[in-house]
Length: 376
Ligand code: NAD
Ligand code: GLY
Image (tube, rainbow, N blue to C red; front, side, top):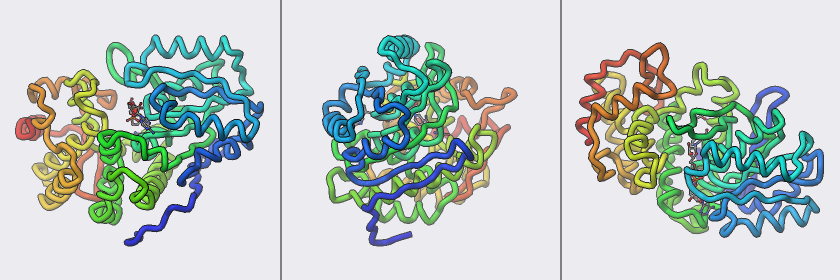
């Protein structure tokens, strides 16, 4: 684990899934060479780029220029930004537009944006004509360290988030750290929660490194580029290792849901709105999971204190009361019982101390209620 980070040179990791293995390219300014990185993957010299207007206004010209310089024809599908775009109606509209534009099975979809675009475009790639190749070019920290890697794609249903989806792996992930320079600080912080998650799950050295280097990662501007590159690469390596071992979430992959059972309940209570971003909910959820772990004798109080101090110092909310929305422990428990990860009627919680997370079922709900109560 380097103290003085010098990770700016671009690097390529592999997510090892046999004949579906793919490269994760990480580096500064990779967007400007995206055409060259895409070329070996294309059967036709054209791509169908799915993106949204905010990403286009900040980073679109760079991708346009990169595709042009490699003589790749591009058809653009520019959607509205925001979670509402991950809907059944927007999915139908996108699928119709792709078909109307003449997409066929030899084509490639490029998902260019944050997790919303990655999930939607990935799901379109999985389903249109029963499968089109796709490449992820993530532009938020959350998408770079989590959603673009591992092949979870999907959309929201009126009944809840991510209820329609598919495991469908991209052919490559191209991560340009410099795209984060235009990302609003609040979004950068939200993505940072997912970075911390990798340390807490099973990598105490990485968590210690984040304690020392986290501030550089979340300060916008070129100064933190080396630290961001290192943190993104380390996170992607962790995710690639976990997904290679358990692609369909029958075991180890479930650890990536640390903080999510609590977090999803908070998000649901806030109506999946801008009141609480996904990563913000995960940060509070991680604290709740550690608190529950301490109460259950699965973690030391010192671990809870360290994670709480780090997230607070970095500028994140660490309790439900800071969200500023009235909610009750009972209402949050009801959301948890409807979680996708409920199995045979029992809620799964990822619990443990820093570096020792494991899935627990049959947890005493009175303890969970006490944790929620103290956070509200
Ligand atoms: P997002 O895609 O909505 O992006 C967040 C905001 O940042 C948007 O306003 C967007 O317009 C803006 N933005 C994106 N890139 C930018 C840039 N470079 N410069 C300036 N602005 C930029 O949100 P997100 O946090 O990236 O993703 C959240 C979604 O990801 C949720 O739908 C969640 O369910 C999903 N998710 C999926 C997985 C998975 O494994 N598939 C994992 C975690 C989260
Ligand atoms: N974001 C959790 C996963 O990919 O499994």
